[in-house]
Length: 321
Length: 239
Image 1: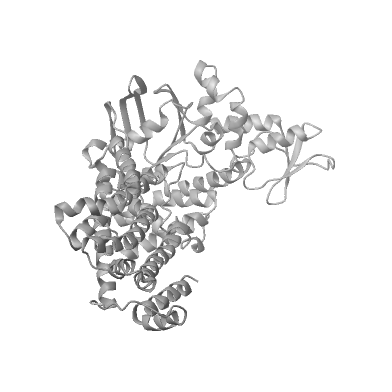
Image 2 (image 1 turned 60 degrees about the vertical axis):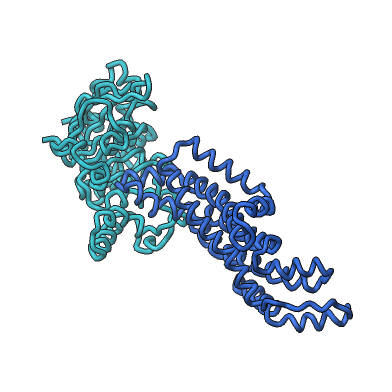
Protein backbone atom coordinates (compact mmCIF):
# COMPACT_ATOMS: atom_id res chain seq x y z
CA UNK A 1 0.00 0.00 0.00
CA UNK A 2 1.23 3.46 -0.83
CA UNK A 3 2.37 5.63 2.08
CA UNK A 4 0.68 8.72 0.68
CA UNK A 5 -2.22 8.38 -1.74
CA UNK A 6 -3.67 11.51 -3.22
CA UNK A 7 -6.86 11.08 -5.16
CA UNK A 8 -8.58 13.52 -7.47
CA UNK A 9 -7.67 16.57 -5.40
CA UNK A 10 -9.24 19.93 -6.23
CA UNK A 11 -8.47 23.30 -4.72
CA UNK A 12 -9.28 26.76 -6.05
CA UNK A 13 -8.48 30.22 -4.78
CA UNK A 14 -11.46 32.21 -6.02
CA UNK A 15 -11.82 31.41 -9.69
CA UNK A 16 -8.17 30.35 -9.92
CA UNK A 17 -7.76 26.58 -9.78
CA UNK A 18 -4.55 25.63 -7.96
CA UNK A 19 -5.21 21.90 -8.04
CA UNK A 20 -7.43 20.46 -10.72
CA UNK A 21 -8.01 16.77 -10.20
CA UNK A 22 -4.57 15.78 -8.97
CA UNK A 23 -3.82 12.14 -8.14
CA UNK A 24 -0.52 10.62 -7.05
CA UNK A 25 0.75 7.70 -5.00
CA UNK A 26 3.98 7.95 -3.05
CA UNK A 27 5.48 4.66 -1.92
CA UNK A 28 6.99 4.12 1.51
CA UNK A 29 10.63 5.23 1.65
CA UNK A 30 10.37 7.00 -1.67
CA UNK A 31 11.72 10.47 -2.38
CA UNK A 32 9.13 12.06 -4.65
CA UNK A 33 10.07 15.38 -6.20
CA UNK A 34 7.23 17.66 -7.29
CA UNK A 35 8.37 19.97 -10.03
CA UNK A 36 6.68 22.44 -12.32
CA UNK A 37 6.55 26.11 -13.23
CA UNK A 38 5.59 28.75 -10.64
CA UNK A 39 1.91 28.62 -9.81
CA UNK A 40 1.44 25.03 -10.96
CA UNK A 41 0.08 24.11 -7.53
CA UNK A 42 3.02 22.15 -6.17
CA UNK A 43 3.26 24.08 -2.90
CA UNK A 44 -0.49 24.00 -2.49
CA UNK A 45 -0.43 20.24 -2.91
CA UNK A 46 2.26 19.89 -0.26
CA UNK A 47 0.24 22.01 2.16
CA UNK A 48 -2.86 19.93 1.51
CA UNK A 49 -0.99 16.88 2.83
CA UNK A 50 -0.47 18.37 6.30
CA UNK A 51 -3.69 20.36 6.02
CA UNK A 52 -2.10 23.79 6.13
CA UNK A 53 -4.43 24.26 3.18
CA UNK A 54 -7.87 22.66 3.09
CA UNK A 55 -8.70 21.01 -0.21
CA UNK A 56 -12.08 21.58 -1.85
CA UNK A 57 -12.64 17.95 -2.82
CA UNK A 58 -10.74 14.73 -3.26
CA UNK A 59 -8.86 12.79 -0.63
CA UNK A 60 -5.40 12.28 0.81
CA UNK A 61 -4.55 9.21 2.87
CA UNK A 62 -1.45 8.51 4.94
CA UNK A 63 -0.79 4.78 5.19
CA UNK A 64 -4.42 4.21 4.26
CA UNK A 65 -5.92 6.59 6.79
CA UNK A 66 -7.48 9.83 5.49
CA UNK A 67 -5.68 12.92 6.81
CA UNK A 68 -9.05 14.41 7.74
CA UNK A 69 -9.36 11.66 10.39
CA UNK A 70 -6.69 13.32 12.50
CA UNK A 71 -6.88 16.46 14.56
CA UNK A 72 -4.95 19.06 12.51
CA UNK A 73 -2.22 19.69 15.09
CA UNK A 74 -1.70 16.02 15.84
CA UNK A 75 -1.43 15.24 12.13
CA UNK A 76 1.24 17.91 11.67
CA UNK A 77 3.27 16.72 14.67
CA UNK A 78 3.54 13.37 12.91
CA UNK A 79 4.81 14.85 9.63
CA UNK A 80 8.17 16.57 9.18
CA UNK A 81 7.83 20.02 7.59
CA UNK A 82 10.59 22.08 6.13
CA UNK A 83 10.22 25.36 4.21
CA UNK A 84 12.40 27.66 2.17
CA UNK A 85 12.26 30.47 4.75
CA UNK A 86 13.41 27.84 7.30
CA UNK A 87 11.53 29.74 10.00
CA UNK A 88 13.84 28.86 12.88
CA UNK A 89 12.64 30.46 16.10
CA UNK A 90 15.03 33.38 16.69
CA UNK A 91 14.56 33.37 20.47
CA UNK A 92 15.55 29.71 20.87
CA UNK A 93 18.98 28.16 20.37
CA UNK A 94 19.62 25.36 17.89
CA UNK A 95 19.00 22.61 20.44
CA UNK A 96 15.66 24.07 21.49
CA UNK A 97 14.69 24.63 17.86
CA UNK A 98 15.29 20.98 17.03
CA UNK A 99 13.48 19.94 20.21
CA UNK A 100 10.25 21.77 19.35
CA UNK A 101 8.20 18.85 18.05
CA UNK A 102 9.52 16.28 20.59
CA UNK A 103 8.49 18.73 23.30
CA UNK A 104 5.04 19.12 21.76
CA UNK A 105 4.85 15.31 21.88
CA UNK A 106 5.98 15.42 25.53
CA UNK A 107 9.06 13.26 25.09
CA UNK A 108 11.15 12.90 28.24
CA UNK A 109 14.23 15.14 28.29
CA UNK A 110 16.70 12.25 28.04
CA UNK A 111 15.10 10.93 24.88
CA UNK A 112 15.12 14.39 23.30
CA UNK A 113 18.82 14.83 24.11
CA UNK A 114 19.65 11.43 22.63
CA UNK A 115 17.68 12.17 19.48
CA UNK A 116 19.26 15.62 18.97
CA UNK A 117 22.75 14.16 19.46
CA UNK A 118 22.04 11.47 16.90
CA UNK A 119 20.67 13.96 14.37
CA UNK A 120 23.66 16.25 14.80
CA UNK A 121 25.93 13.25 14.25
CA UNK A 122 24.39 12.35 10.89
CA UNK A 123 24.26 15.98 9.72
CA UNK A 124 27.03 18.29 8.61
CA UNK A 125 26.86 20.18 11.91
CA UNK A 126 28.89 19.82 15.10
CA UNK A 127 27.80 19.75 18.74
CA UNK A 128 29.24 23.27 19.03
CA UNK A 129 26.29 24.57 17.03
CA UNK A 130 23.72 23.42 19.59
CA UNK A 131 23.96 26.45 21.87
CA UNK A 132 24.07 28.97 19.04
CA UNK A 133 21.12 31.14 18.18
CA UNK A 134 19.77 31.25 14.61
CA UNK A 135 21.23 34.72 13.99
CA UNK A 136 24.72 33.26 14.52
CA UNK A 137 24.27 30.64 11.79
CA UNK A 138 25.11 30.94 8.11
CA UNK A 139 22.33 30.38 5.56
CA UNK A 140 23.46 26.82 4.90
CA UNK A 141 23.72 25.98 8.60
CA UNK A 142 20.25 27.37 9.24
CA UNK A 143 18.86 25.19 6.44
CA UNK A 144 20.55 22.12 7.95
CA UNK A 145 18.97 22.89 11.31
CA UNK A 146 15.64 23.32 9.53
CA UNK A 147 15.94 19.81 8.09
CA UNK A 148 17.00 18.35 11.46
CA UNK A 149 14.08 20.06 13.14
CA UNK A 150 11.73 18.44 10.63
CA UNK A 151 13.31 15.05 11.37
CA UNK A 152 13.37 15.53 15.15
CA UNK A 153 10.46 13.31 16.12
CA UNK A 154 11.48 10.68 13.55
CA UNK A 155 8.31 11.11 11.48
CA UNK A 156 7.74 8.58 8.68
CA UNK A 157 6.78 11.34 6.23
CA UNK A 158 8.70 14.50 5.39
CA UNK A 159 7.32 17.45 3.42
CA UNK A 160 9.90 19.83 2.02
CA UNK A 161 9.00 23.05 0.21
CA UNK A 162 12.07 24.25 -1.71
CA UNK A 163 14.20 23.76 1.39
CA UNK A 164 17.47 24.64 -0.35
CA UNK A 165 16.03 27.35 -2.58
CA UNK A 166 17.53 30.31 -0.74
CA UNK A 167 21.08 28.95 -0.43
CA UNK A 168 23.92 29.85 -2.82
CA UNK A 169 24.66 27.25 -5.53
CA UNK A 170 27.84 25.83 -4.00
CA UNK A 171 26.27 25.36 -0.56
CA UNK A 172 23.11 24.05 -2.15
CA UNK A 173 25.01 21.24 -3.79
CA UNK A 174 26.63 20.27 -0.47
CA UNK A 175 23.25 20.37 1.27
CA UNK A 176 21.69 18.20 -1.43
CA UNK A 177 24.47 15.64 -1.17
CA UNK A 178 24.23 15.57 2.63
CA UNK A 179 20.48 15.24 2.50
CA UNK A 180 20.71 12.40 0.01
CA UNK A 181 23.14 10.60 2.29
CA UNK A 182 20.82 11.06 5.25
CA UNK A 183 17.86 9.89 3.23
CA UNK A 184 19.68 6.71 2.21
CA UNK A 185 20.10 5.92 5.87
CA UNK A 186 16.73 7.09 7.21
CA UNK A 187 14.51 6.02 4.27
CA UNK A 188 11.73 8.51 4.94
CA UNK A 189 8.82 8.98 2.62
CA UNK A 190 9.63 12.42 1.26
CA UNK A 191 7.62 14.83 -0.85
CA UNK A 192 10.04 17.47 -2.07
CA UNK A 193 8.93 20.58 -3.96
CA UNK A 194 11.39 22.38 -6.22
CA UNK A 195 11.54 24.24 -9.52
CA UNK A 196 15.19 23.34 -10.05
CA UNK A 197 15.51 20.52 -12.60
CA UNK A 198 19.06 19.64 -11.53
CA UNK A 199 17.93 19.31 -7.94
CA UNK A 200 15.08 17.05 -9.00
CA UNK A 201 17.39 14.86 -11.08
CA UNK A 202 19.88 14.51 -8.26
CA UNK A 203 17.46 13.74 -5.44
CA UNK A 204 14.39 12.08 -6.88
CA UNK A 205 13.48 8.43 -6.84
CA UNK A 206 10.61 9.61 -9.00
CA UNK A 207 9.77 13.03 -10.40
CA UNK A 208 6.17 14.21 -10.60
CA UNK A 209 5.87 16.91 -13.23
CA UNK A 210 2.96 19.31 -12.70
CA UNK A 211 1.26 21.88 -14.85
CA UNK A 212 -1.78 23.99 -13.98
CA UNK A 213 -2.78 21.85 -11.03
CA UNK A 214 -2.53 18.56 -12.86
CA UNK A 215 -0.05 15.74 -12.96
CA UNK A 216 1.60 15.62 -16.39
CA UNK A 217 4.03 12.78 -15.84
CA UNK A 218 5.48 10.77 -13.00
CA UNK A 219 8.55 8.68 -13.55
CA UNK A 220 12.11 8.08 -12.48
CA UNK A 221 14.49 10.80 -13.75
CA UNK A 222 15.95 8.47 -16.39
CA UNK A 223 12.43 7.44 -17.42
CA UNK A 224 11.39 11.00 -18.25
CA UNK A 225 14.20 11.17 -20.77
CA UNK A 226 12.24 8.95 -23.13
CA UNK A 227 9.25 11.29 -23.00
CA UNK A 228 10.96 14.53 -23.95
CA UNK A 229 9.07 14.63 -27.24
CA UNK A 230 5.80 15.20 -25.41
CA UNK A 231 4.95 18.88 -25.59
CA UNK A 232 5.03 20.16 -22.00
CA UNK A 233 7.62 17.69 -20.73
CA UNK A 234 10.14 18.73 -23.37
CA UNK A 235 9.43 22.42 -22.86
CA UNK A 236 9.81 22.33 -19.11
CA UNK A 237 12.71 19.92 -18.72
CA UNK A 238 14.53 21.40 -21.72
CA UNK A 239 16.33 19.76 -24.59
CA UNK A 240 19.52 19.53 -22.48
CA UNK A 241 17.75 17.24 -20.00
CA UNK A 242 19.81 14.17 -21.04
CA UNK A 243 22.94 16.19 -20.36
CA UNK A 244 21.72 17.18 -16.91
CA UNK A 245 20.75 13.60 -16.24
CA UNK A 246 24.42 12.69 -16.46
CA UNK A 247 24.91 14.64 -13.24
CA UNK A 248 22.88 12.06 -11.33
CA UNK A 249 25.28 9.18 -11.85
CA UNK A 250 28.56 8.78 -10.07
CA UNK A 251 31.13 7.09 -12.25
CA UNK A 252 32.24 4.79 -9.46
CA UNK A 253 28.77 3.42 -8.81
CA UNK A 254 28.25 2.20 -12.36
CA UNK A 255 30.00 -0.96 -13.42
CA UNK A 256 32.45 -0.01 -16.11
CA UNK A 257 31.44 -1.81 -19.23
CA UNK A 258 32.30 -2.07 -22.91
CA UNK A 259 35.74 -1.02 -23.96
CA UNK A 260 36.68 0.68 -20.70
CA UNK A 261 40.08 -0.89 -21.25
CA UNK A 262 43.18 -0.50 -19.15
CA UNK A 263 45.12 2.51 -20.35
CA UNK A 264 48.28 2.15 -22.34
CA UNK A 265 51.36 4.39 -22.32
CA UNK A 266 49.61 7.34 -24.02
CA UNK A 267 51.43 10.07 -22.11
CA UNK A 268 49.61 13.07 -23.53
CA UNK A 269 46.04 11.99 -22.83
CA UNK A 270 43.98 13.98 -20.31
CA UNK A 271 44.00 12.33 -16.89
CA UNK A 272 41.14 12.61 -14.42
CA UNK A 273 41.10 11.46 -10.79
CA UNK A 274 38.09 9.34 -9.99
CA UNK A 275 36.86 11.21 -6.88
CA UNK A 276 33.84 9.82 -5.02
CA UNK A 277 31.59 12.61 -6.33
CA UNK A 278 32.68 12.32 -9.95
CA UNK A 279 29.64 12.11 -12.19
CA UNK A 280 29.17 11.17 -15.80
CA UNK A 281 28.74 14.87 -16.43
CA UNK A 282 32.27 15.52 -15.14
CA UNK A 283 33.48 12.69 -17.37
CA UNK A 284 31.80 14.24 -20.40
CA UNK A 285 33.30 17.62 -19.55
CA UNK A 286 36.69 15.92 -19.47
CA UNK A 287 36.06 14.37 -22.88
CA UNK A 288 35.17 17.77 -24.32
CA UNK A 289 38.38 19.23 -22.90
CA UNK A 290 40.52 16.34 -24.12
CA UNK A 291 42.30 16.59 -27.44
CA UNK A 292 41.70 12.99 -28.44
CA UNK A 293 38.44 11.07 -28.12
CA UNK A 294 39.21 9.49 -24.78
CA UNK A 295 40.42 10.41 -21.30
CA UNK A 296 42.35 8.41 -18.75
CA UNK A 297 40.55 8.03 -15.45
CA UNK A 298 42.64 7.05 -12.45
CA UNK A 299 40.68 4.79 -10.10
CA UNK A 300 41.19 5.00 -6.32
CA UNK A 301 43.26 1.80 -6.62
CA UNK A 302 45.60 3.63 -8.98
CA UNK A 303 44.60 1.90 -12.21
CA UNK A 304 44.17 3.99 -15.36
CA UNK A 305 41.03 3.35 -17.37
CA UNK A 306 40.48 4.62 -20.87
CA UNK A 307 37.01 6.07 -21.28
CA UNK A 308 35.45 7.52 -24.39
CA UNK A 309 32.04 8.84 -25.36
CA UNK A 310 30.74 5.39 -26.23
CA UNK A 311 31.41 4.38 -22.61
CA UNK A 312 29.11 7.15 -21.41
CA UNK A 313 26.39 5.91 -23.73
CA UNK A 314 26.97 2.40 -22.48
CA UNK A 315 26.93 3.45 -18.81
CA UNK A 316 23.69 5.40 -19.31
CA UNK A 317 22.13 2.38 -20.96
CA UNK A 318 23.00 0.46 -17.83
CA UNK A 319 21.52 3.19 -15.60
CA UNK A 320 18.20 3.12 -17.46
CA UNK A 321 17.69 -0.55 -16.70
CA UNK B 1 27.68 50.09 32.35
CA UNK B 2 23.94 50.00 32.89
CA UNK B 3 24.56 49.11 36.53
CA UNK B 4 26.71 52.19 37.02
CA UNK B 5 23.92 54.31 35.61
CA UNK B 6 21.30 52.64 37.77
CA UNK B 7 23.30 52.98 40.97
CA UNK B 8 24.06 56.64 40.24
CA UNK B 9 20.37 57.34 39.73
CA UNK B 10 19.45 55.39 42.88
CA UNK B 11 22.07 57.23 44.96
CA UNK B 12 20.82 60.63 43.80
CA UNK B 13 17.26 59.53 44.51
CA UNK B 14 18.12 58.56 48.11
CA UNK B 15 19.90 61.88 48.55
CA UNK B 16 16.88 63.87 47.38
CA UNK B 17 14.32 61.88 49.37
CA UNK B 18 16.14 61.34 52.68
CA UNK B 19 18.93 63.89 52.64
CA UNK B 20 17.10 66.91 51.35
CA UNK B 21 18.19 68.98 54.36
CA UNK B 22 21.77 68.99 52.99
CA UNK B 23 20.59 70.31 49.67
CA UNK B 24 18.47 72.83 51.53
CA UNK B 25 21.54 74.02 53.45
CA UNK B 26 23.57 74.25 50.28
CA UNK B 27 20.78 76.20 48.63
CA UNK B 28 20.55 78.51 51.65
CA UNK B 29 24.09 79.76 51.01
CA UNK B 30 22.89 81.38 47.81
CA UNK B 31 19.26 82.28 48.56
CA UNK B 32 18.93 83.21 52.26
CA UNK B 33 15.23 83.90 52.78
CA UNK B 34 12.57 81.18 52.35
CA UNK B 35 8.96 81.17 53.42
CA UNK B 36 8.45 78.68 56.22
CA UNK B 37 6.36 75.75 55.06
CA UNK B 38 5.16 73.12 57.43
CA UNK B 39 5.23 69.71 55.83
CA UNK B 40 2.28 67.56 56.71
CA UNK B 41 3.44 64.41 55.00
CA UNK B 42 6.88 62.82 55.17
CA UNK B 43 8.79 62.50 51.90
CA UNK B 44 8.95 58.70 51.90
CA UNK B 45 5.16 58.57 52.20
CA UNK B 46 4.83 60.89 49.22
CA UNK B 47 7.25 58.72 47.24
CA UNK B 48 5.28 55.60 48.10
CA UNK B 49 1.99 57.27 47.11
CA UNK B 50 3.55 58.43 43.89
CA UNK B 51 4.78 54.95 43.05
CA UNK B 52 1.36 53.45 43.68
CA UNK B 53 -0.42 56.12 41.63
CA UNK B 54 1.97 55.68 38.70
CA UNK B 55 2.66 51.93 38.75
CA UNK B 56 -0.71 50.35 39.54
CA UNK B 57 -2.52 51.90 36.55
CA UNK B 58 0.41 51.09 34.25
CA UNK B 59 0.55 47.44 35.29
CA UNK B 60 -3.24 47.16 35.06
CA UNK B 61 -3.00 48.67 31.58
CA UNK B 62 -0.31 46.15 30.64
CA UNK B 63 -2.51 43.26 31.75
CA UNK B 64 -5.57 44.59 29.96
CA UNK B 65 -3.78 45.63 26.76
CA UNK B 66 -1.68 42.49 26.44
CA UNK B 67 -4.77 40.32 26.84
CA UNK B 68 -6.81 42.46 24.46
CA UNK B 69 -3.91 42.57 21.98
CA UNK B 70 -3.56 38.77 22.01
CA UNK B 71 -7.30 38.29 21.56
CA UNK B 72 -7.27 40.77 18.68
CA UNK B 73 -4.32 38.96 17.16
CA UNK B 74 -5.91 35.52 17.35
CA UNK B 75 -9.54 36.39 16.63
CA UNK B 76 -9.56 39.93 15.25
CA UNK B 77 -9.83 40.92 11.60
CA UNK B 78 -7.31 43.12 9.81
CA UNK B 79 -9.70 46.08 10.20
CA UNK B 80 -10.06 45.81 13.96
CA UNK B 81 -6.28 45.46 14.28
CA UNK B 82 -5.56 48.58 12.26
CA UNK B 83 -8.27 50.38 14.25
CA UNK B 84 -6.46 49.46 17.47
CA UNK B 85 -3.16 50.70 16.06
CA UNK B 86 -4.58 54.07 15.01
CA UNK B 87 -6.49 54.45 18.29
CA UNK B 88 -3.22 53.87 20.10
CA UNK B 89 -1.54 56.62 18.14
CA UNK B 90 -4.39 59.04 18.77
CA UNK B 91 -4.45 58.15 22.45
CA UNK B 92 -0.82 59.11 22.83
CA UNK B 93 -1.48 62.62 21.56
CA UNK B 94 -4.29 63.16 24.09
CA UNK B 95 -3.02 65.32 26.99
CA UNK B 96 -3.15 63.53 30.35
CA UNK B 97 -4.26 66.75 32.11
CA UNK B 98 -7.41 66.64 30.03
CA UNK B 99 -8.20 63.07 31.05
CA UNK B 100 -7.64 63.90 34.71
CA UNK B 101 -9.87 66.98 34.46
CA UNK B 102 -12.57 65.04 32.66
CA UNK B 103 -12.65 62.21 35.20
CA UNK B 104 -13.09 64.46 38.26
CA UNK B 105 -16.82 65.10 37.73
CA UNK B 106 -17.36 61.32 37.52
CA UNK B 107 -15.05 60.03 40.24
CA UNK B 108 -14.66 63.07 42.47
CA UNK B 109 -11.41 64.27 44.04
CA UNK B 110 -8.63 62.00 45.28
CA UNK B 111 -6.38 59.27 43.98
CA UNK B 112 -8.99 57.44 41.93
CA UNK B 113 -9.60 59.90 39.05
CA UNK B 114 -5.88 60.35 38.68
CA UNK B 115 -5.24 56.60 38.52
CA UNK B 116 -8.09 56.08 36.08
CA UNK B 117 -6.71 58.80 33.83
CA UNK B 118 -3.25 57.25 33.90
CA UNK B 119 -4.74 53.82 33.18
CA UNK B 120 -6.65 55.08 30.14
CA UNK B 121 -3.56 56.87 29.00
CA UNK B 122 -1.37 53.74 29.23
CA UNK B 123 -3.80 51.26 27.67
CA UNK B 124 -3.67 52.55 24.12
CA UNK B 125 0.09 52.69 23.44
CA UNK B 126 0.63 49.25 24.98
CA UNK B 127 -2.29 47.81 23.03
CA UNK B 128 -0.98 49.33 19.82
CA UNK B 129 2.49 47.93 20.36
CA UNK B 130 1.15 44.49 21.29
CA UNK B 131 -0.84 44.29 18.07
CA UNK B 132 2.05 45.60 15.95
CA UNK B 133 4.60 43.38 17.68
CA UNK B 134 2.52 40.24 17.14
CA UNK B 135 1.85 41.17 13.51
CA UNK B 136 5.55 41.71 12.85
CA UNK B 137 6.59 38.13 13.68
CA UNK B 138 8.10 36.86 10.37
CA UNK B 139 5.72 34.81 8.25
CA UNK B 140 8.22 31.97 7.85
CA UNK B 141 8.41 31.58 11.63
CA UNK B 142 4.66 31.39 12.13
CA UNK B 143 4.28 29.04 9.17
CA UNK B 144 6.96 26.74 10.55
CA UNK B 145 5.30 26.82 13.97
CA UNK B 146 1.94 25.94 12.48
CA UNK B 147 3.44 23.29 10.21
CA UNK B 148 5.11 21.58 13.15
CA UNK B 149 1.76 21.19 14.83
CA UNK B 150 1.47 24.01 17.36
CA UNK B 151 -2.07 25.07 18.14
CA UNK B 152 -2.99 28.75 18.36
CA UNK B 153 -2.24 29.07 22.07
CA UNK B 154 1.11 27.29 21.79
CA UNK B 155 2.06 29.53 18.89
CA UNK B 156 1.09 32.60 20.88
CA UNK B 157 2.95 31.72 24.08
CA UNK B 158 5.95 29.82 22.71
CA UNK B 159 6.65 31.84 19.60
CA UNK B 160 4.70 35.02 18.99
CA UNK B 161 4.69 36.66 22.42
CA UNK B 162 8.42 36.10 23.07
CA UNK B 163 9.20 37.61 19.67
CA UNK B 164 6.75 40.50 20.11
CA UNK B 165 8.00 41.31 23.61
CA UNK B 166 10.62 43.93 22.63
CA UNK B 167 7.95 45.93 20.79
CA UNK B 168 5.48 45.53 23.66
CA UNK B 169 8.19 46.57 26.12
CA UNK B 170 8.79 49.72 24.10
CA UNK B 171 5.12 50.63 24.53
CA UNK B 172 5.25 49.81 28.23
CA UNK B 173 8.36 51.94 28.62
CA UNK B 174 6.71 55.00 27.10
CA UNK B 175 3.56 54.50 29.16
CA UNK B 176 5.45 54.00 32.42
CA UNK B 177 7.70 57.02 32.00
CA UNK B 178 4.83 59.29 31.03
CA UNK B 179 2.76 58.01 33.95
CA UNK B 180 5.55 58.62 36.47
CA UNK B 181 5.69 62.24 35.36
CA UNK B 182 1.95 62.67 34.81
CA UNK B 183 1.18 61.35 38.31
CA UNK B 184 2.38 64.74 39.64
CA UNK B 185 -0.71 66.29 38.08
CA UNK B 186 -2.78 64.27 40.54
CA UNK B 187 -2.00 66.81 43.25
CA UNK B 188 -4.27 69.31 41.46
CA UNK B 189 -7.25 67.01 41.95
CA UNK B 190 -6.49 66.01 45.52
CA UNK B 191 -4.37 62.93 44.93
CA UNK B 192 -1.21 62.28 46.92
CA UNK B 193 2.29 61.82 45.58
CA UNK B 194 5.21 64.04 44.74
CA UNK B 195 2.93 66.54 43.01
CA UNK B 196 2.05 67.93 46.47
CA UNK B 197 5.37 69.68 47.17
CA UNK B 198 5.48 70.84 43.56
CA UNK B 199 2.05 72.46 43.72
CA UNK B 200 2.79 73.90 47.18
CA UNK B 201 6.11 75.27 45.92
CA UNK B 202 4.49 76.91 42.93
CA UNK B 203 1.86 78.56 45.12
CA UNK B 204 4.47 80.01 47.48
CA UNK B 205 7.07 80.83 44.84
CA UNK B 206 9.45 78.41 46.53
CA UNK B 207 11.80 76.97 43.90
CA UNK B 208 13.42 74.65 46.39
CA UNK B 209 10.06 73.14 47.26
CA UNK B 210 9.32 72.58 43.58
CA UNK B 211 12.69 70.93 43.21
CA UNK B 212 12.01 68.72 46.23
CA UNK B 213 9.09 67.16 44.36
CA UNK B 214 10.53 67.30 40.86
CA UNK B 215 13.92 65.72 41.34
CA UNK B 216 12.68 62.38 42.77
CA UNK B 217 10.11 62.15 39.97
CA UNK B 218 12.77 62.82 37.39
CA UNK B 219 15.08 60.23 38.94
CA UNK B 220 12.28 57.66 39.17
CA UNK B 221 11.54 58.17 35.47
CA UNK B 222 15.23 57.84 34.59
CA UNK B 223 15.50 54.70 36.68
CA UNK B 224 12.44 53.15 35.01
CA UNK B 225 13.98 54.00 31.65
CA UNK B 226 17.28 52.36 32.56
CA UNK B 227 15.43 49.18 33.61
CA UNK B 228 14.10 48.84 30.08
CA UNK B 229 17.40 49.70 28.43
CA UNK B 230 18.75 46.42 29.83
CA UNK B 231 15.83 44.11 29.14
CA UNK B 232 15.05 45.57 25.78
CA UNK B 233 18.61 45.46 24.49
CA UNK B 234 19.16 41.85 25.50
CA UNK B 235 15.97 40.74 23.78
CA UNK B 236 16.51 42.56 20.54
CA UNK B 237 20.06 41.25 20.23
CA UNK B 238 18.62 37.74 20.42
CA UNK B 239 15.87 38.47 17.98
